[in-house]
Length: 240
Image (tube, rainbow, N blue to C red; front, side, top):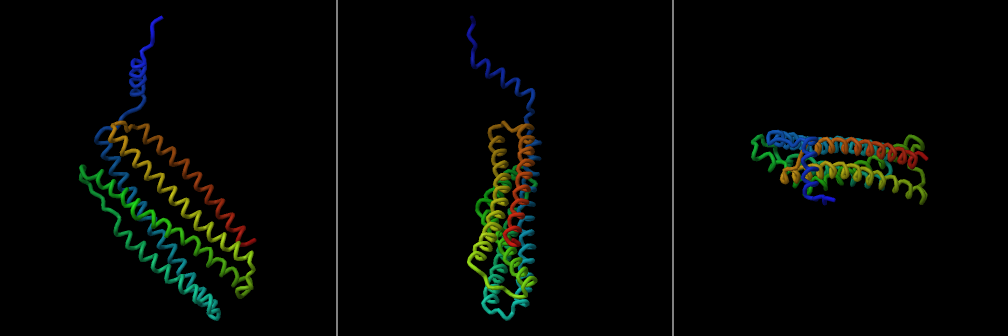
């Protein structure tokens, strides 16, 4: 019986795979890099702007609390300190928008531009995601205080289990927000880094792009379910 040559089998498998998977041309790769470079910039900018809007709402709600509970000096002091913190973090996010690396339409620079944005994410934007997640905890705090005002007309005496529930709600709000945002961005960044590696190895193909799109849709669905579950759990904690 004639022995089977493994090298022959590998060559045959690669040849067969080449018929079903189309490699991207140089022009397609440049177009892909250019589009992803613009997309990641838009995600950075949109994320920071959305957080600025959210923190503006937190600031407005805190001003309302200062008016409603103006006779509670301890609460006024705490909210005033938090309001200053909100203003500082808004300034931090605003300045970070200006640090987002600019796009370049020159072909040889497209990859460098994208690599600069990946470096920007690891050095700066990850920290901004934690700062953004603070908005969730502060919104929960303001929601609790407004809840007390409309239900009791004042801050009722708080027991130890109230501190536990409210503290857990704020921590959960912060943790859920940070987890979802960081996981989502890490996924996109790892996809880009994987594509750059395949480009270096000259193995990037239409299959790679199609597989990444499918994974992105699945991850988005999972995050939406997790977010809905988290919001429901927070509502049960606060309005139990």
